[in-house]
Image (cartoon, rainbow, N blue to C red; front, side):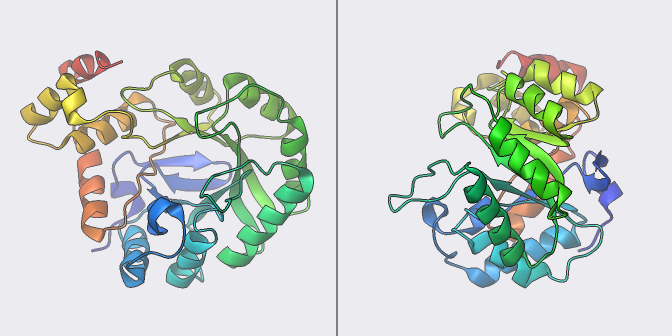
Length: 289
């Protein structure tokens, strides 16, 4: 099955000098349990990546810390040499420890080492998009990002990075980053149930900056949301389809990166995101927040 980017749900968005599909793919789930080690089904993981591109998806999200190194190496094996239309966004700012944790790694030398690892494992000379991961596993934390973001801005000037973004960031950190270098995207937790970034999304949209919700379906289940269950049942759709479609309707600058290790699930996500929601549906879903 092969489609064009324009036929994917949501159409496209301009990310810096790159045109990407608003429906993208997040590679995190391709690593092993706990995002550590290789996948149980390597052939299946490679098939998912190739199917994503075959479906017309031109925005992949990854990080060399996934595995670590696993997802980037899978992407390289599956898709290199990369199509000129493909944009790969990665993240820096954390490492993995022996307990499976994600301790921060934002000192200049750590960021440079991470950028080099991403370049090597993806097999490229320049990274399309690099997001600086801030905060911790519990969410954003206040504090200046100046030293870390200035390091990435310098690497951008050196030609190793094309575009910059921030992840798990407060609105104040986003504003600070924009005083240092151009920001093309913000990647934060956001979904029907977690809407703390509503104001930030609208501000970014006004400035043509993308907002990329991670774990877009996390934080609630059909059993926890009567409104989501009711809308899904009325539309003969899954709660996941409704949640994805809602995100695409929420704002034109929202880019989706749902992840899966299954080709069938990937196709279901793409089809589900194309669900048409009425004004009544949207009003009912808004009650969740």
